[in-house]
Length: 209
Ligand code: JB3
Image (tube, rainbow, N blue to C red; front, side, top):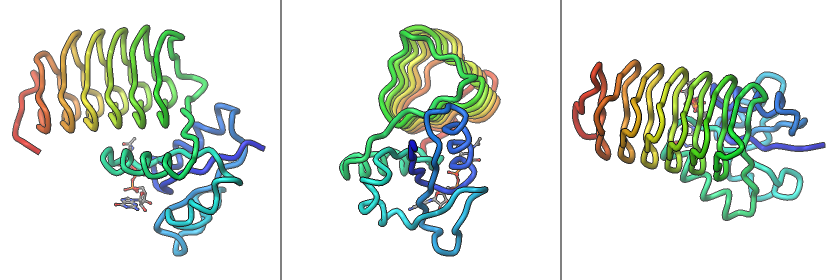
């Protein structure tokens, strides 16, 4: 049996679990969430305890994925569980197309119908959500979330912890800073700085975060 421990029993956690099972690399899923013991099950999978119970599970569940949408918390937990000795595999849906020249760090999830083209590089803990496309030579820092239906052209870079909102489009060679948010449906045609919220068509920085 290939066991996978999923951290976070919410909406994102159940999509991660179904993606893992669809990949056929995992056949036994269990969750940890601080909602335990009031929540003991998610769909058909058990919650085994809270996040503090992870330390006792490294032998039974050596592989773990952090499935919490908030970028800063996800990254913090990746570091915490990595230092406890867990392995952090990448979870990739079989319908996603990932070029063999793409470089993936650890703890990344790639959902159905996502496409990642040649020589892009994704940092640890990125979420590449449903039906998003990341074209050639893009660079995503650690903990970036590319929301459903985003289209990113070639050579785009996105800094650590930033979120690209649902349905946004980004033209080629754009640089987006760290810890920024691009609002849903934006069209990004010029660079965006660190720690700002930007949205609209064309997307403009609206203020600091
Ligand atoms: O938009 C899409 C397609 N997915 C979103 C996903 C990426 O992020 C989704 O709609 C949500 O916006 C969000 O999903 P997530 O992370 O599953 O949401 P939420 O239910 O807020 O958090 C999941 C679990 O994380 C919860 O069961 C909480 O117990 C746990 N959690 C949240 N905040 C936390 C904290 N646990 C700890 N220890 N500390 C926290 O601060």
